[in-house]
Length: 251
Image (spheres, rainbow, N blue to C red):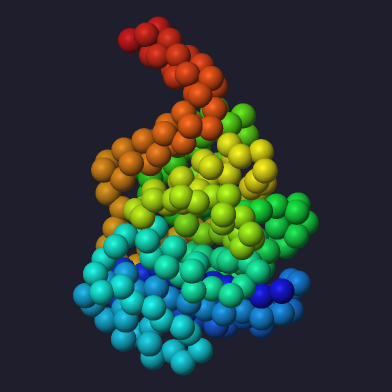
C-alpha cells in the first residue's frame, strides 16, 4: 500500500524546507509502523512569489508542481490529489504547524476503524492555536455536529489521511480555504463515508497566516449551511429553527 503526501504551499519560504525535511525523515517510520510500503511527497506551489518554489525544488526526492498564479488552497490540494499514485492520500499545510509523525497514527486509525478519512484534531490539550481561531473552530464543529448528529471536534483541520476511492464521494469541493470544512461536512452527512479523528499537538505557524478570521469564517459557515441544506434539509431547518428560538430567548 502506498501513501501520497500532498503539501499545498503559498509563500511559505520560512517553513516549507522544514516541513519537507520532516516528511522525508518520517518516510521510513511510516513504512515500519503501518501497512504502507511506499511513500511519495508532492509539493504544490500555489503561485508563490517568494522562495517557496526554489526551496521545494532543491529536494530531489520531492515532486514539485507549480501553479503560475495563486488559485487557492483547495485548488492546490486538488492539483496535488490528481498527481498522486497512492492508495492513501495524506496532506498537511506547509506552514510547520503540524508534525508529519502523526501520519502514522492517522493511517493506523483508518485501518483500525475501516474509515474513509482520518482527521488530525488540533483542539486537544496542549494545542497552541490562537484563541479566536479555536472559538471559531468550536462553533463550526458544533454546527456540523448538530446537522449531522455526529460529533467532529475540528472540521477545519488541514491535516488528514483519506482513502483514494473516497474522493469521488467527496467531490465537488471548493478551491478556497474552506475546502477542508466542506470535506468534513460532506463526510459526516454521507452515510457511505466514515470519518474518524485523532488528537495531535499543534503549534503556531511560521510566517504570516493566509487565513482571514472574518472573511474566511463567513465562507466556512456558508459552506456548512449549504451542504447541510443539500444533504439533510429537514434536519437543517430543524436546527436553524432551534438556533433562532434560542437567540430569541437570549435577546
